[in-house]
Length: 96
Image (cartoon, rainbow, N blue to C red; front, side, top):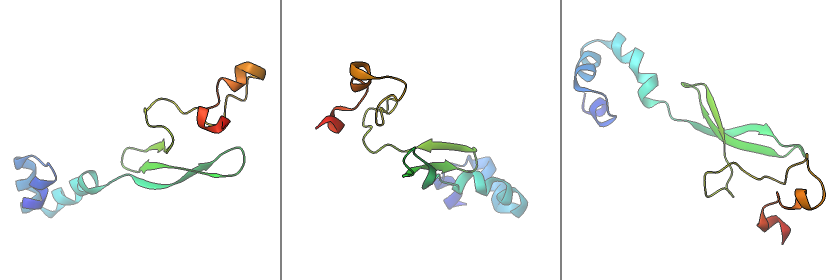
């Protein structure tokens, strides 16, 4: 029961899980499942795109190591634009 409380399980649920293995089987995946870091796709050049896969929630969140602001990634520019408009969409570090 201390491990369940340490995981943030409310007291009543922790007690029920400690007394009834079926309750523990039901809540364990929700408590102990952590998103897994893995390859989630490939980019247009065939390079792997990594991300976090949360199997419990059914979500995938791509990981961008160059994105420190949390904003949408600029990637390698907007392929729908050309000329100066395209160049403005390329992250500064890629222009060096």
